[in-house]
Image (cartoon, rainbow, N blue to C red; front, side):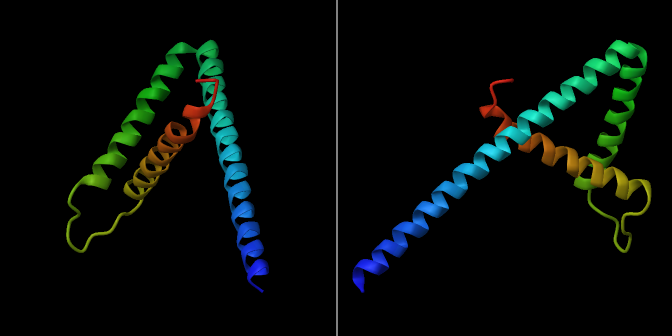
Length: 112
């Protein structure tokens, strides 16, 4: 009985370790693919029109700055987020999560 229990625990440990290693590799590959995709988008848009690229970057910066401002300021009582405020807050949150993901998993990528 005791040998079976030990063997079962070792088996569970090995399955968990291999699963974590596979997940780590998949997340690192996803971060590399995301980084390469973003770099390709910037390169192609810059080669198409540098002025439009800068204008788009400025508009995106304003969008994210408004989302950050709405996220970190004290909310007014009884007022929820609506329309543009909700969109900019969601955009800022998604962008922040993507940046954290790239920093954590993209650091192991050889492409950075």
